[in-house]
Length: 460
Image 1 (tube, rainbow, N blue to C red):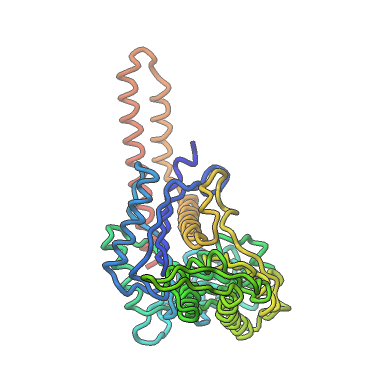
Image 2 (cartoon, one colour):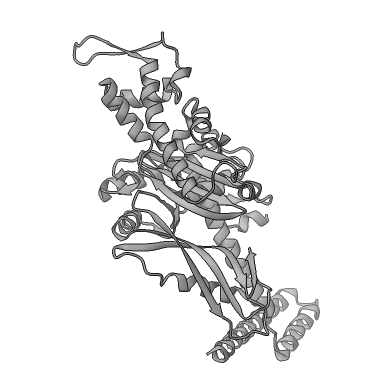
């Protein structure tokens, strides 16, 4: 029954083509059980940015309604929300602090202080810091330390990857979520969410690039030796391919999308030159014959452009084909295009595979959720669990450090003795003992609060 006590965490993926809401809880094996799932078509989002708040609210509400329909007993108050869009930027910074208590081991509080200092980094007006991610730490002369807690030293420093976004774009997302009756627990960069859903620790250490091809944008996250080295948002996605097909072949957008999904290929050489698609004519116009080869040429041109951007970003951070042994992991809705793996390997010179979010899902999940389309949303739930587990660990560590005063220990023994005495009048005894235990816990809690106050006074 232990997993019943685990919190239910909800991921909300506000995309250009779809909005998905997924509620999950970890089971006793640490796998995600999906206990609610809903999706809706997205209308108010373009290139990953919320432009029409009212349309976005309607779509969020529709996704939530579908989620409640899948599990009527579900209650959703707060959500982890994915963020993307070509307004997203990233920068590298360095931070150091000289420690006050050099005799003590480095604590989580000092790491938190180091991270919070980075939120004061100068960024252009109109931008806002979304996340500060520590890369590797240094303690005095020791470098490349993944986790410095427990080390001793005078000076602690770290390199940081800071992710920023446009204030108005961020405000539009949070406003749409709030007006849907929800609270944004945290904003998470979409490629980082997708990465946590489709990768294991061995991928991170080998060096890998996550390419999440969404409707409006393609998101990139590069990891090397377990560290996030680079993030980028490429302003092209599945919608651009659909629009190219619509313009290039003179068809409706819905027809273009259907052709892309059913007959599309990312490699023109693999398309049959004698195959044609018949499109019904509009209002009495004659039917149209579309060459599958022409369709593939259009898709390949746009996909090659996206992969050229990926190659450019990898070269920018000095992580070319010799460094990324894990190659490229393709995920997101656009990764389902036929022959995309071959095109990616041809353009980038790296091995490629499709990333499915099944690694962290419990058995018996809804089959549709195994698709790369839902990588971001499942990754958002995993991010929520990561936060929850870190907070619990910190609380437990602080709790262990608290010394229980002797007078509280004596009270505990007295209560225990009370519980053991008198078997005659069981009902009244239970009431009396419950009161004794309640008093004990009340005093114990007060004692802890006093200790925390004293600790804070000493710190000040």
